Amino acid sequence: MTLTMNVERRDHPGRDHDVEPGLYLGDVSGLRLWRWNGVFLVLGIDGDRLVRPEVTSATYDLLVLSVGSGTVEVTWEDADTMRFRSNGAGLRFVQSVFDPMDAALAFATGVDDAWRLQMGEDAHYVVTRMSGLLSVDAPNVRTGEAESVDRKVIDMRPGSDGIAEIALTQYEAGYVARASRPSFEACRVAVHEELATWSAGFPALRADLASTGDAAIALLWSSTVGPRGLLGRPGVLMSKNWMNAIWSWDHCFNALGLATGDRRLAWDQFVLLFDHQHRDGMLPDLIHDYGRMWGMCKPPVHGWTLRHLIDADAVPVGGLDAIYPKLVAWTEWWFTYRDDDRDGLCEYFHGCDSGQDNSSAFDSTGFPAASPDLAAFLVIQMDVLADVAMRIGRESEAAEWSRRADDHLALMLDLLWNGESFCIRRGSDGATGRTGASQVFVLPMLLGDRLPEQVREALVRETVDEGLLTPFGVASEGPRSDAYEPDGYWRGPIWAPTTYLVIEGLRACGRSDLADDVAAGFLDTVRRGGFAENFEATTGLPLRDRGYSWSASVFLLLAREAAHERG
Image: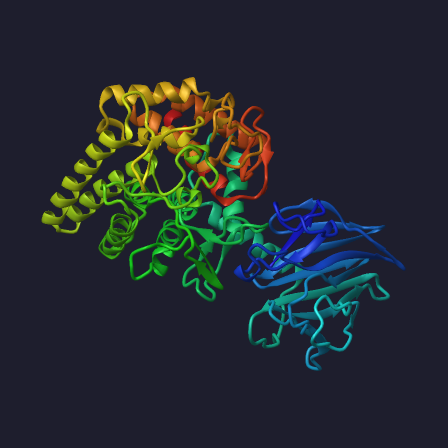
């Protein structure tokens, strides 16, 4: 459950259904992924007038709205209940979404001065009055008509003393009235203390990065949802705007961002997708409380991530023994099911498999595509499997993984390196090509000393010559490229995770000077533009979703490294 200010007449980027701008109480369960998630439009009541509430101040424990000459304060009682307290004003909640059966209805509970709102296929709600006046306009339910005009309307109005207070609870299946409730102020203090206590577990950052670091920690805290439905452990959503699910590579970067602050939650993020591993070894493309998607996958950055979690001491006792067979199955899945031409190189079947959905790298060859970043990730993953096998006493398996990693690296260089740069090899006929100036071609820098010196030097040169290294971060497509688009998703904008991967690659190839410059530029970009989904490469201005968790995690990773370097 969220409160979200929708500032444009669209319900989701790229879909642009006509939605009235305003403040919405939203449902960010997976049920509403890719759909409008605003359940109620929230309006202010100023005497006899309906007005739009304006945000006066917003912190994680208290939202203050101005409504005409009055105010409304909002805080959390717990993860499923919001508290609203008004002085000299009221609020109206107008049903904003309809389910296909048009089954929403409302009725008084008769027990605790409350109304129950059954919302058909959506989450259900109970609104409870603590002071002031509460009324619900609940027309009888209709069936057989989509888009009914029978919207449910909740009014919270001040009493004779000018005060009103309600609790709004979301529930799935059953609701039990609460015997007592803490005061509004006690709720606010509890939220403040919870976040403060959790934040204190993270290491201190440089003074110039501290306030943005605090905001990053708070965003991760806010984006975390508890176990429910298919989620058997806490999960950090990508966003509570539109991308309200957990994708299979996004979770890796969030695990790393949490690793030095909350090791248990970090491990939960890493393992979460493995909890839903297919019997064939594939990891789902995404997971949320209501479902999974298997149409695509994401790149195997999981071995690389596990190496970092080991270094951060974020693997629990028994964790390596438990994750090893799962990481083996994920690795073998690629070689078993994603090498259609059996040449030894695994292939992406879709741009989304690469995590860089519409990258120009695949324009010339199409799919299936054996890509240098995929080959590099698999070499790293097999190296990590060799290390883990040694740590858990499987020496013979460790030797076999090392041999396979060496062989795959040799094959990658033989089939994808053209003597000057990496290319894409089409799986159907072995045709090779490269188009654009995508960062896909330079990500093998992560292999560092595993690569011949001339390959390392050529990759570093390419990142510079193609303009991938900007003052604001790493462009997904070089701005001088014919394929560059300022807001082209993976055809230009800067993304946090691949910026971090390229920074790591530069360090691995001996160019810490360039890595430091890129890291400093990206940290400054986030300080100015917040935790956007991505950033325009020539200006650093934020694009798309403005509350993206992996951007916060990468900021924390780079900020910690900056603090360590200065120390």
